Image (cartoon, rainbow, N blue to C red):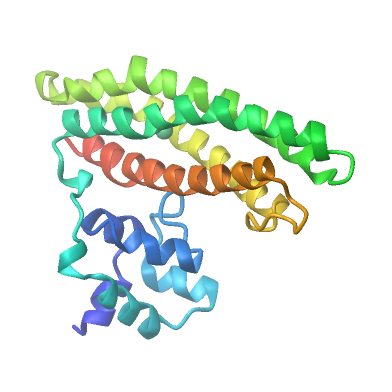
Length: 231
Ligand SMILES: [Fe+2]
Ligand SMILES: [Fe+2]
């Protein structure tokens, strides 16, 4: 089978789990590899009207051995749970309140002349509340289960995990929709000409938040959860 066809039949989630640097190209092309990570590359390209052979050749050129990163997807499940908490959850706990503060300032100063900022704040605050509760559930219930999975009889694992995992996946979808709304409202994080420093800092923070959330949800949806369920 040609290399191109082998890649076309892999899912976006599998491709990024094999090599995280591929996420850069998927971000650039707008291919959703986290919540939409179960689609094959072939189907995803078709839906976006992208030429598969061009995407494959770009994917190959992305694989530069000098930039090979440590791949958290290769960690054992307890270490992967620790990694997600220590990097993505810690980042969100610091960044979500900081973005609320930036938004409040920008809305106060520019909300009247740029009313879309008020809509952005109205979409952001419930997203933040839901995400904080979501991380609490992962840290208090789901991840502790996953960390001790090897000491639990196999028959008890799947029923205990499948309910909470489907709830987490549904919440990821809802967070993904909110992030799409932020991108739409901010014209893909292009600050207006007259934007002040705080305005620009807000857009920069939201763009980083989007990238981090994609990597975070990818690790949970496409690596941690399926591997835990497959035990
Ligand atoms: Fe998480
Ligand atoms: Fe999550």
